[in-house]
Image (tube, rainbow, N blue to C red; front, side, top):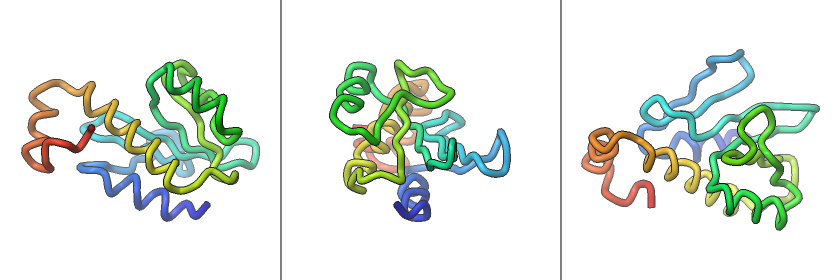
Amino acid sequence: MDILIIKSYLLSKPEAVEDYPFDDKTAVFKVQGKMFALLSKHQGRRLLNLKCNPDHAVELRDIFVEIIPAYHMNKRHWNSVILDGDLPLGEIERLIDHSYGLVVKGLKKSIREGLEVRHGGDIYK
């Protein structure tokens, strides 16, 4: 999987920013200061950690071998997507959308409404 395509999609989300708070190799993607994705490498594999509804997280792990409990994060709310596998790009984009949406829904109402005004009311649905 081309990491540049994944990064480009992550940064295409409204007001998404890329940050490196841990080291110069672990990219953290945030909206309004809240993380919705983390791109790293562990044991030689590229991992994309994404927030996920807990019930859906378990379903995804059962369906796709490329989706595992998140490395170094709350495994109830986060999954790691192994980017070196065969998971289709469309599914990865859907998972990114889901993660971004969960984070935006969790923002304070005034911040969320500001995002909706600037970018349209359906940015997190």
